[in-house]
Length: 483
Image (cartoon, rainbow, N blue to C red; front, side, top):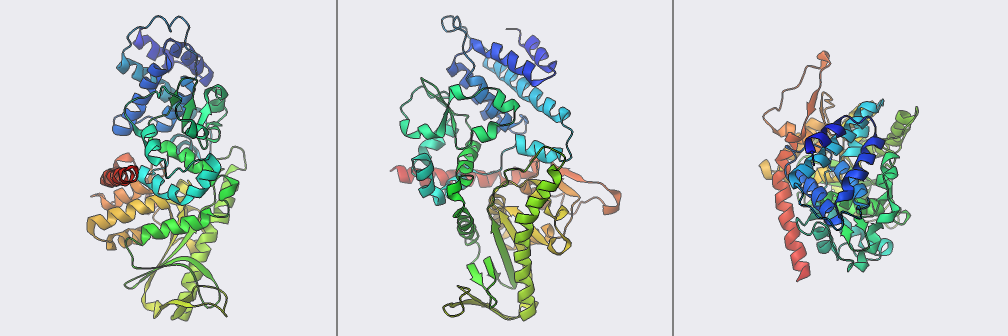
């Protein structure tokens, strides 16, 4: 094989059809085990050495799934030749980068950055966070998939994270059938027509007659979570689950945290935290944002309307709580809005002497609509921090590890000051925190210069210790269950 010639050919292609035609011919010389070895080694390299391999992980996963179903040449089944794994990995990476390049330069979009992040990035959710959240949906997972995700998480983690057995050459996993899609049901059209994410919703990988292909990254647990969240059966429970999950995370750091409290007028607040001279209002929103990117002339207005219906509504609820507290100064909160049956839960006295913060916690993937929410919020809500629950979890833990929970409130103060000259390359709140905590802190371009700082992935390295710590915690918990 002339790898140099093959690489040059890929770089010269002008459209997706040419690339898929090349791949269909190129990968027919490999059997499934060999293809799985190439693709999953590339995926694992990207996970382990993200700074060296900066191609799209999501794109690698999606293309590998499509290329896996391409038929092996009948002659190749009988004539096996040794192949150069490192060179084959390079060819696959060339294909990934070329498709990314074509999509980047062929799109004329008002929200190109948002589109690229949504299509080619995974949410920064740790395997432990998936495990912890999916526990709350265990009854629903039994109903949807016919099995307990919580009870089988150890096996599922081996599916998505094991460095060995890259093609599972067995079908002795009948109980997991609902988590896999039949190989005959997919082709490159689902990618070209931008239907891959919906097609693989609820799925971990592909099932063939002789085995299973699972892309080796825990990020594909996103498919399972999305399969639950976007199922009609979750509609009436996921809001309460987000509140419970948020309370579980936050209560690690605060003793006085109150869920579903009502003031004297009967207004409900999802979570209220009392800490020293601080009052923190938190509203939780779990609505799906399925159309985070929409084609067409009305795309921007549709997205902003959804933002107003979901995010601004939560901001309004936070603001209502703050205004009532400041108006009355001394407020009693109850466990019900029924004045005849309600019981007092806690009091806030001398509210005007306290610092009041507001946070909107979201479950779904809002990208820059969360990271740069002040860009879209009305003036009266611009001092509200909008954050994904998983980013909040990481920032709380990391800030506390650095110098105590007061560090978190310093960051919260910074994030509610409406400074928009700093944004991350991948719409990532974690990069915002990483920049703030780094030696670059206080270096901002002057507002009148119309300059921005764009943050790269290196600012998220501060969370590496979090990842290591909670991976070990996950292993211990799962091993205890297995015993």
